Image 1 (cartoon, rainbow, N blue to C red):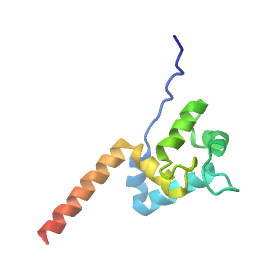
Image 2 (tube, rainbow, N blue to C red):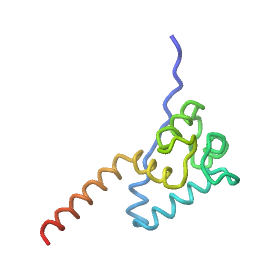
Image 3 (tube, one colour):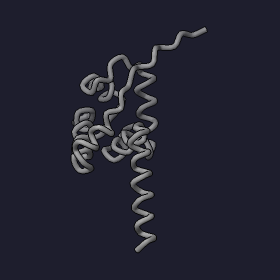
Image 4 (cartoon, one colour):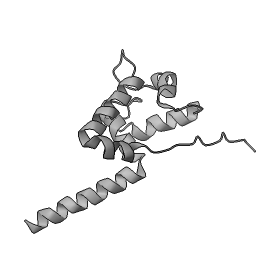
Length: 116
């Protein structure tokens, strides 16, 4: 029986950041995170750049498999890397509370549209 590496502890700060910074501020911070993780020569997050820079964002102890999985979850165009849009979308998808808040906000907007 193969031993599994322990799951890293993850605390979702995106909802707090969204409340504190607002929508534009949150996007600015996500872009800053992208810039920390990207390969400066290629302009995208590659496996190598993620592995090299993940600790800057507190992602200590992730295995190569974890990092590859993270990349593949957000790699919508299948090029093996994350561009800025893919990274931002992935960060939202990985935040259940923020996704729920987005759904509630969208429902409110749609409700208001129907009333007009």
